[in-house]
Image 1 (cartoon, rainbow, N blue to C red):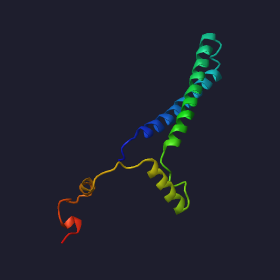
Image 2 (image 1 turned 45 degrees about the vertical axis):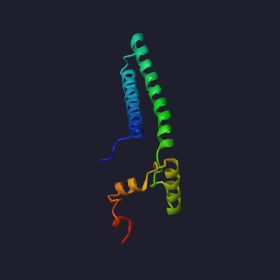
Image 3 (image 1 turned 135 degrees about the vertical axis):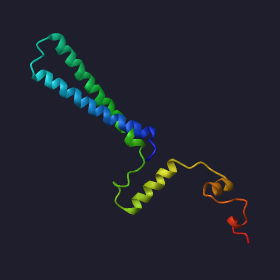
Image 4 (image 1 turned 90 degrees about the vertical axis):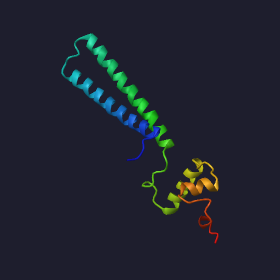
Amino acid sequence: MAESTPLDALASAVTEMDRVADKLRKHVTEARAADCTKNQELEKALTQVEVLAESLEQFAFLYQEVVVKNSPPDHEEITSTDEREAAERQWEFEHPIPPQTLAEHCEQHGLNYDSDQSRGIN
């Protein structure tokens, strides 16, 4: 299972905000359809719930833009191999790997840096 990132959490929150906003609107519509709104206090509460749903939708829209802007390229949307490779190079350029020494690189790949065999010395 892949590790969740803050961007994944934000994308999940956006989905949840949309879902809750839809549910709130549905409940308001059902309450008004049942002709329960003869009570002014209830109508005021329903209007406030509608405003809350609208605010949730606005937040979801704003944060969806942040998710899209900061997501790595989606390879399914890119058709040609050249475009995909260019997108990957661009993403790697924007998100560089921190520099490391040769010893650290060898250790990361399971090689013994101090061994003559790992450096091709006979």
